[in-house]
Image (cartoon, rainbow, N blue to C red; front, side, top):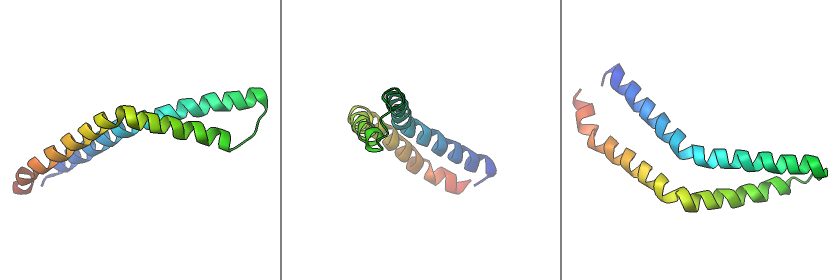
Length: 90
């Protein structure tokens, strides 16, 4: 294995990780921001008020984007295993 192959494998892994994590992270960021603005306007300082909506949104995102996320993980893993023999030879 040469350096270019290792760098490509690392880049692909990071790109796949970012693709899989971004829907969950962005949705919780937006919900957290909305709840924080609501708390600032109403002066309600309850910690569980931010936790429950985030968990509901994460569950919805996993239900909606779960098949796509599973497809991305499956393609990445199958491509990695299919190219394994070529990677070892180099």
